Length: 102
Image (cartoon, rainbow, N blue to C red; front, top):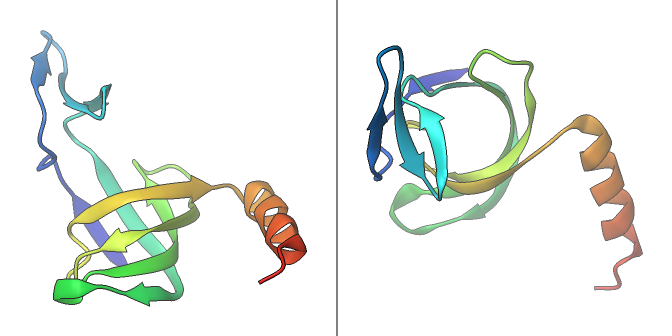
């Protein structure tokens, strides 16, 4: 399991008297962003500098884990943009991909 907390995303800070937020891709996010990789399912692709595209089960902000496909740094403390799916969404995606002729 990998755990992490990060507010290292670049963006504008937005403060209030109770909470700190930062702007990421046009969305305000809490400054105490946290995640836990609860299960590593596999590597989809190996990238440059040790970054890998991985499919994992990830708990975001202490919520129940969801399937997550994204690039991760070697130490799993930094991440790229990704896609987070519920089990039902992953099943629907799998059904669609099974129809694709490769």
